[in-house]
Length: 66
Image (tube, rainbow, N blue to C red; front, top):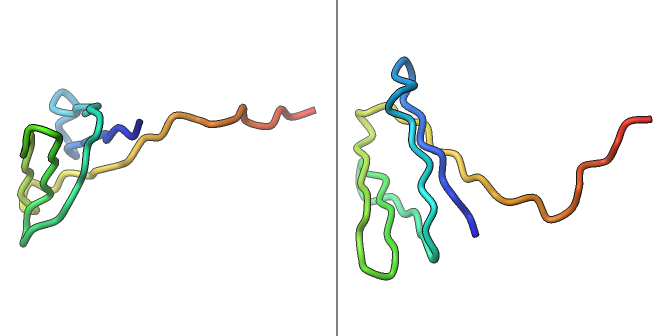
C-alpha cells in the first residue's frame, strides 16, 4: 500500500504521513489532491511549498554489505 509523506520546509511539526487504501494523488491546477474511496481527503495548494514523497513498503530486503 503506498503512503505519502508530506513535508513542509521549515515546519517539521507540520509534516504528516498519509496512509489509506486505495489512495490516489492527482494534480488539478495548482493543487495536489489526495482522494480515497470516499472522495477528496486532502488538498494542498502549490503555494504551500510542501514536498510530497511516495513511501513504498520494501518488497525485498536491502543487500547487506560484506
